Amino acid sequence: MDFKGFDHPGRPAGGGTRSVKVMIAGGFGTGKTTMVRSVSDIKPLTTEETLTQASADVDHLIGVADKTETTVSLDFGKISLNESLMLYLFGTPGQERFWFLWNGLFKGALGAVVLVDTRRLASSFRAIEEMERQNVPFVIALNVFPDSKNHPVDEIRDALDISPHTPVVACDARDRDSSRDVLVALIQHLKDRSAVALESR
Image (tube, rainbow, N blue to C red; front, side, top):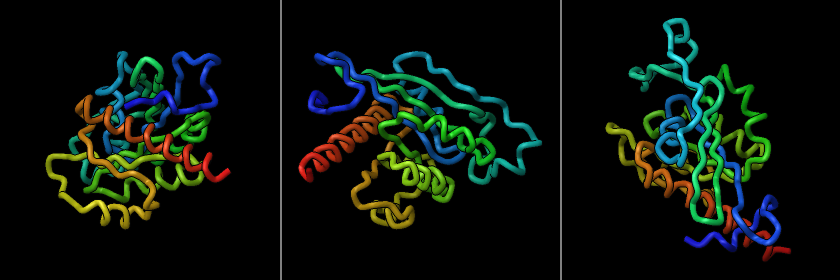
């Protein structure tokens, strides 16, 4: 895909490589750290800590009982989509007790991926609400787990109460190509929004 027509306020004069800040958000255990790890061109910075029994009552492990670690601050990675566009990836913590960190993480973000576990849709409601509150364009990425049911996209869209203009794509956060395709879908969404905004001027 050609991103040369994608304009961004951080674009350096005379062209060159543009850098874009992208958030990887979602509920607890939806695969944010996994996606950053799988797609990053560099060894990602992660801030995972071991889950303890003391956190069991506050981290709501229903549906993710096998999870042993949790992000306590952020995940960071980067990927070059081509020679002209670099994405800096910031993964958010998913647990409610760390949501106070989100405001700082969202500053300067051009767009976001909201990872959704279709077995636990409610776990990503807060992330979607935060995108809408901060007016951050986003795509929904349905992270397909082995025991996930195949729900029609329209049903997912209704259940999440999102705009018909918000892209919904399926992915496997463990797979680099699949995760990259999600990021490409986000950039295309940003391009489309930019084109509509220009036409309406």
